[in-house]
Image (cartoon, rainbow, N blue to C red):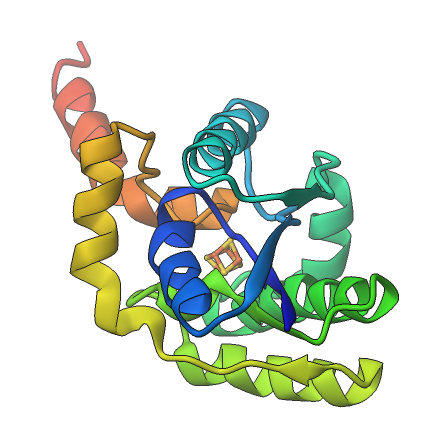
Length: 191
Ligand code: SF4
């Protein structure tokens, strides 16, 4: 059985890959993440993915146009996390299902199901819809069980681990408190 594994990044690929191979799947990764900004971050995550692919002898389909504008066109003004993440999942999962169907894979799944920080059910719902739309099986597994193991392995490998989900909005949410502290500190010094 051949499966296409949507890979959001290198560190999150390690545990799902291990599980899928243990189930007898022949795994190919699919890197399609136009949600990662800015470009230097996008590049670093690609480099980490390359490192994982090399270490685990994992073939990767690279669909890696730096898609800032295309992604923003899809999100439009739905800046709130619930709205924008739903659109972001749909974009990435639908492309994965389409790619799996086009390339003759038996099934597809995603490393997004490994994250403790993502909307697990929302991702599943998008994947079930995409499976129907493209007539290809969605393989569900709750990879979150291996959260700790995957982190430890990625740290041991010394690969880059990102500090935020991917989009400019998630970067803002990650650092806004720090930005406010900086602003307060400097504005106190105003003459
Ligand atoms: S927080 Fe993550 S999943 Fe949500 S829109 Fe941003 S990149 Fe996509």
